[in-house]
Image (cartoon, rainbow, N blue to C red):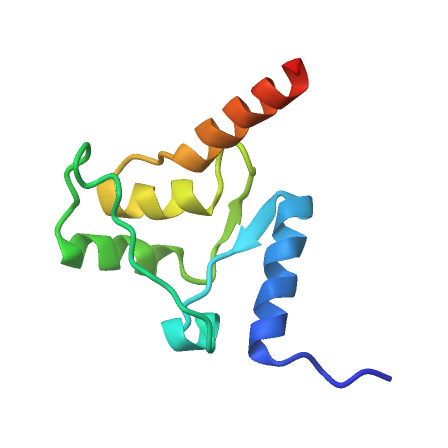
Length: 109
């Protein structure tokens, strides 16, 4: 028997499952519960190219998703797409562009 996973482990396991199931459930958690003792930084890297929505709109939009099952696709609808959709009204992910470019370069070598 294994001890039950703590909240952080349960969240990580849930994230891994969503990659393979193509579905995810949106949850609201305190940032300190998610990151634990790890460091983090806020990265609003798209603010130079996209106009952020008002904070109250972002929060309201996010609250509408809490508890909802959403589709998940690593390349077309990942967590970065989700948060940029909330912040800017458009889902964008530079992570995808970079990973596809790197894969292409590596595969041609």
